Amino acid sequence: MSKILNEVLLANRDYVAGFDKADLAMPPARQFAILTCMDARLDPAKYAGLSEGDAHVVRNAGGRASDDAIRSLVISYKLLGTKEWFVIHHTDCGMETFSNEIMTDLCASSLETASVDASGWHDHGAGPGSTEAKYINWLTIKNQAESVLEDVNRIKAHPLVPANIPVYGYVYDVKSGSLIEVPEATAAGRAS
Image (tube, rainbow, N blue to C red):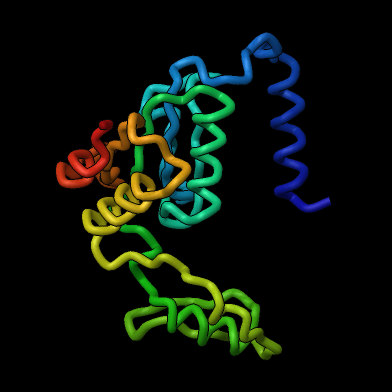
């Protein structure tokens, strides 16, 4: 058993010993959802004041409005009653450090973990790689505010997203813990 697997299972055993959440309803009690990044420095429960059962949190690389993220938000609304959504990206995001082309090249070289330094990304694997990466839009980020606005617009334009759902746009500052509104994104996400 790996060290990490053992730690997770031990932590779960402790969690189960004091578990008192069996009666939580499936729909989120506060009727909202957050789309945010998978970055380990972000704790949506803390920065948004959540308890278990309060809200849906959809996480992916960059907190981007990918097809699957929008799918999750639509399910959150249609089947589980969320009425407001947040798109929250963050400062110092790894998605700002590469492009679609860099990711395609790295994956074509090998499927091993790459590294980055001042001169850029480097692949250290011996191969084989895969050319499948060229078929994926990695939704990289050049500017946080612009990417939040892009994602809010993408969500609002989706044919399965009702116009009456407001979508708010924010950037989480990893140095201060603050949520910083992207006013253009929140304006674009207004309910109509």
